[in-house]
Amino acid sequence: MQKKRARLEPAKYLLLTPSTVILLLAFFIPILYLFTLCVYHGIPGSGLIDYTNPNLDNFIRFMDPYNIKVLVRTLRIAFVATAVSLVIGYPIALSMTKGSNLKKSIMLALLLTPLVTNVVARTLGLMIIFGNNGPVNKIIKMLGFEGIKFLGEEFGIVLGLVQVYTPYMVLSVKAVLENTNFNLQEAARDLGCSKWQAFRKVILPLSMPGVVAGSLFVFLLSFSSYITPKLMGKGTIMTMSMYVYQQGMSLMDWPFAAAVAIVLLVVSLILVTLYNKMTSRIERMNDRTGMYRNTNYSSGWHLFKARIKDFFYDIYASVMRKLEQSESTKKTLRGLSAGFETVGTILVKVLVVLGVIFIICPLPIVLISSFTEANLVYFPPKGFSVKWYVGLLEKTEYLNSFLVSLRLAFGAVALSLIFGTMVAVALTRFKFRFAHALRTFFLSQMMVPGVIFGLAAVRFAARIGWNASFKALFLVHIVICSTYVIRTVLSSLIGFDVSIEEAARDLGASSWQTFWKVTFPIIRPSIIVAGLFSFITSLDETTVSVFLVGGQTVTLPVRIFSQLEYGLEPTITCISSLLVVFALIILLVIDRMIGLHKFKI
Image 1 (cartoon, rainbow, N blue to C red):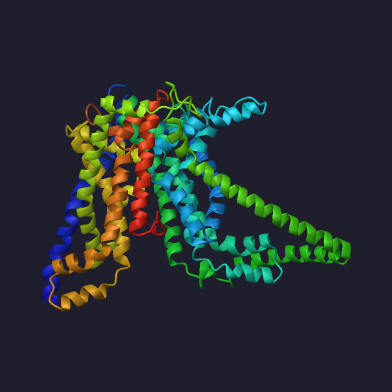
Image 2 (image 1 turned 45 degrees about the vertical axis):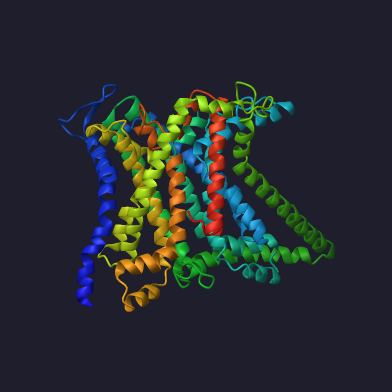
């Protein structure tokens, strides 16, 4: 047995080697190289760097009032977007845990469709809806009010972030609510609580881990977002990600851009750490223990809070007893309570419907607008025509970009599936001294904002002579796709019955035969799903690619994004519509293979 283990010892390192080399070359070395620049002095507009006299002047410069204003604005936008996402997302998550399976499946499909659709296409729909001549402003003007300027304002950016990231909030809260015993709420009702009191005192506290995890996740994504603030803000509302791009790509002040990137990364890593702690707590939760399993009820702080609550409850109870001494007052209170419950139930249902419509509506808006006959984008469209779809065949720049995106996606996914599966097998089937650190190493790309990854990649690519090359873009897409593959396949292997593999080896099968004939057929659906998600992720990737493209290597999402910066035109709506249809096909395939209910963020 020991000889067999010794023979397999080199194998586990061979499984990790390809992904490790790619991750070091395309991610860690560029990130470290970028951060080494932060102590030097850059000459804005030239791209030149003075490597003498390293110091911390760039960080001191960041303390300028304007830079602090940008940071505070970004935090404010992210906070407001998170709060609104919670208000919209919580009722949706609650409704998805109740009702028939058909209702749950429909709501999940509606939620996941925009989630896997290109962010540029979704933002395009929002730009149409909230434009100066969009349907929202038309309705406002019909009511006799002045139109509201959404685009180019913080409010517009918040709306965009809420639409894009609310699905993540819903899925986080839903994951906890599905493990919640709603019989506890009914028990509270039987003991005299109103519907609202039972929810506030039972369900809401039990769902708090999901609320906190979802809020941190949405806050992190909103804080580090680049595409949505750029488009919805019309480039006039500066955020941290846009500031990093401006300093690095427009002003060519690489050292200061690196310093700003470090500030952005530190804040992001703090949020990621908090998020990981909360999600690990969610995974440990079960119906019996809930969130109070580690509570120390004999602590001084807990006793102090209990006394404060008892004090106010005694006052409340004495007032209610006085009021209920009168029969008419008692009937009035019951009537008010029933009325509030009815109104509250209606409001929650209305909020759920409006929330789902808000999340999904940009997609049909884009589809409908693409059939316009006019040369500008209107909603509703002026006339009906498919000429813009036919005209796509004449737009060689879009066709070339589409072919570049396909080459990237197919190549990156093929290698990612092989290398990512190798990593997942190694991490689950072999013992490593620093297993948790290794897992973090291979999933670290998810912790770094895309704008920092892109800035580091373009700087390192220029250093080694790969600027605006397909090779640099290809390596970056392998890193991005591998992360999704490793995470998905890891999940399937962790819950795998290892005794089946042991039985195969006991019957004489080699390690390779065991994997190919036993393990692979069982995890094949997860590998296919990982490939599909990686493919659509690569095909839709914009934030990192926008730094690296150039010449003949412009991908389709980047070309759409670049065009939207100058204005709306029907060709863009046609291409975005095709991306929406492609996302629907991917979801349909996943639903047929493993079911949408197994989707995890």
